[in-house]
Length: 86
Image (cartoon, rainbow, N blue to C red):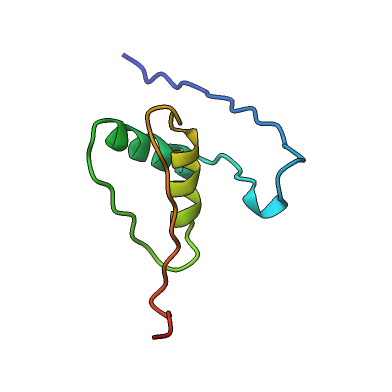
């Protein structure tokens, strides 16, 4: 039996009402991570994102949280840093 390939075309439209830095281009990786994170959260599993600075952890997390049903989930985002002065 030969291999079958499924071609997925993702169409997205630029929303000019949002700032440029908040636009997310859907790539294979961002779609994969969002799918995994969303399904873990919906199944009441904890999620910890780790990686180097600037790899998009916060962006992906915030994007997933914004897409959750706001009637069921209350979202509070607090940005923290290891460089906080005491």
